[in-house]
Image 1: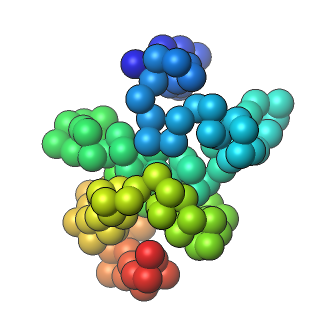
Image 2: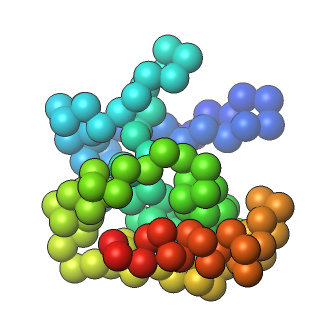
Length: 136
């Protein structure tokens, strides 16, 4: 469960600690400092955000919002400073059955339209992303 705020044309999802069933619980994000402050807002670090986006993509794979989640995953992998060691630790802790890892890898290899939406191509950018994250 979440709340949603719409500011101009931007939709913002707001997850509360006790109503949300996120793969990384809100209290963990706070207690383990898995967030960064950006313009006075606390937001999940890229590694945590990647897992949360993978969870959302898994749940909504065949919907329009699922396509947005996959686009966000590709954008994070392409543009964010994801620390592989931190990502591997989070996957080990929060994804023991490798479900999210599978979703991330599936997104990298199957999401052709999402690359185009970001003005990227699978043949150039996707192959590089795949190579970077093949050892997850």
